[in-house]
Length: 257
Image 1 (cartoon, rainbow, N blue to C red):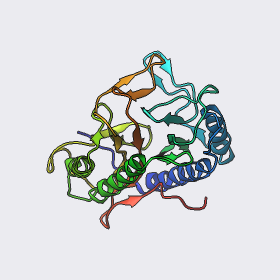
Image 2 (cartoon, one colour):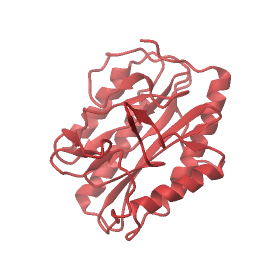
Image 3 (cartoon, helix red, strand yellow):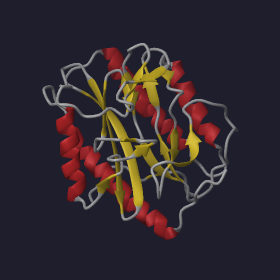
Image 4 (cartoon, one colour):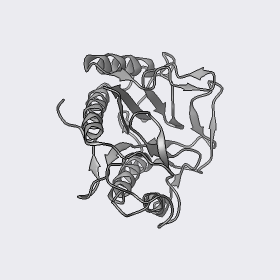
């Protein structure tokens, strides 16, 4: 497997793109409240991305003959990923919403996501968010030189399942850089010691997707939105991470741009 290793210049550009992606996501979170339409969140993100001189890497993203029609992914409750903002989808108290922001700046991609509560949410959903976010951090901690991709995968799976949740198996994390999806695939399940060896200079999008119910998913008729097969709520957290000899560096950690 040929996993891209970034040059010094590439890493510098990745830092720029990821800093913008993180800033957009941080500002977008402030707009989440009961009564707002998911389309409005998408349009706010569009303006924020443009204000940094970046572009949405989601808008127009092509799979086959289909092009993604929105500027970010906004996924509510049972929607796992790739939700399309809609004037008809109004956030309500007790919902959870995943905001997935991916930008291109100066030729490189920054990719990050967070799931946030809308108003007051039930304790089990609070636990879902906490477990998914902590699973991301545990996975990142395994993104160390000479470890293997399976060490990330197994760590996420073990932690999530120990709390009675399930990890999505139809979708995976991935390398990121000059394009949104590069090798390697990074499943949220697997075996320690398996997969490609981690080297310095890799940039990895690690992204646990965790369901309250079963792990199975399906895609809606729009061709993009992935939902849980049993209708249970799902959470999604993501960071872009640089592997270094000093340990993993989170490039999408929010900081001033």
